[in-house]
Image (tube, rainbow, N blue to C red; front, side, top):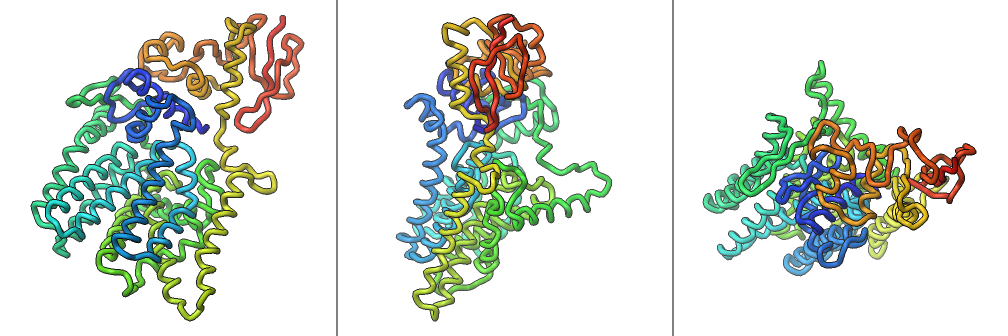
Length: 504
C-alpha cells in the first residue's frame, strides 16, 4: 500500500465503524487526514457502504473504484455502440481507454484524487445526453444529473476548483453560440452546480484566506482546518519572473507526457507514461479529422471532449506537472486517442484485413506495459514495489506483537509518524478519542498534528535508548548488537529488515 492509500483506508474504516472521519467529524467536506495534508472525501461516499456491509479488507476498500471505472467503460461503450450506432468508434474508444496506463494504475490502488476524473466523465456523458435528447423532461433530468456529478468532482480533487469554472465558461459560450440549450435549462444547470459547490467554496475560503486552525460548520457540513495546505501542488507565484516560470511549467508538463514518465514510480512505468507517448500522435488526428461516418450526436460528444482538453490548458501553466496533478487531462486524452485510432482505421480501407493490426498492436503494447508494471526488467523497480509498505507484512508484525510473548512489549521503528497509519489499519478500528489517548496527542488539529512519538505499542526509534529487555525493534539487515537477538526476517517496501528483541 502507498502511504496516501493507507491514510485514506483509515478514513473509510472510521466512517464505516463510527460514522466519523479519523478526527471525529461527521459530515466533513474535506478530510484533514493524518498530518493535516488533506484528502478529498468523494471516494468515501462510494467505499464506506461496501465496508459497512462486507467488512474491511484491502479488496473491499479498492473494489468500488474498480466497479466505478468498469461501469464508466460499459456505459460509454453502450451509449456509442447501441444508442448512437457507432460500433467501430465505440470499440476503438474503449480500446484506447482500457490500454491507457493511467486508467490501469489509477484503478489499481486508491489515490483519492483519481476518482474525480471518473465521476467527471460520467457528468460529461450526462450533459451530452441532455444536449441530444428530444424529450424536454429527459433533457432536464440529464442536465441536473450532469451538474450534480460535476459538482461532486470538486469534492474529489482540489484541481477541480480551478478547472470547473474555466470549463463551465467554455461550455456556456459553446451552448449559446450553437443554441444548444434554452435559457431556463442553462440556468437550472448553473444554479444546481453552484448550490452544490457552496460548502467546498466556504471550505476553500476558510483554509486559504482565513487559515482556520479549528473545525467549523457550514449548514450541516463540517469544515476542517488544513494545517499543511496543498499549495505545494502549484507553482510559486512569488518567483521573480512569474511568466517564465509558468512557461517552464507548461513545457515541463508536455515533456513528461512525451518522455513517458513523471519520475514518480507510483504514478507511471517508464516509458509508457500516463498516455503511451506513441499514441499521443492520434490525438490531433482525432481532434481535427472530420469523418462523415460520425453522426451529429457523436460529434457533439467529441466537441465536449475537445472543450475539456482546452479548459485544462490554463492549468498547465500553474499546476505542477505530474500524472496525478494533471489527471483531468489524462481521461480526455485517452478518449481522443480512440477517436484518432478510429479515423486512421477508417482512412486505410485499401489495406483490407491488415487494418486489424492497428488495434492488435495497441493491445500488444498494453500487454507489454502490464508485464513491466508487474515484473519489470533488468532489476528495475516495478510499479507495485513502489507502493512502499506491504499490508501483509504489517499484519504479520502486528500479530507477533499481539501474541502472548510480546503482548505488553514495545516495538521501536524508524519514522513512526509515517508508519503508524499502516499499523492502525491492521488493528481493531479505534475512534478519535481513543486515537488521541494512545498517541499522546492533545487535540485533533494542533501544531504537531500526526507527528506522534508513540502509538499503542509503537515507539519512534529516536527513543530506543529507553527500551527494556523484551522490547522489539525493526532494524537494517546488517545490524549487530549483542544486546539484541534476531527474531525473524521481514520486508518493508520491498527492502529487507530484521525484527530483533532486546535481551539485556
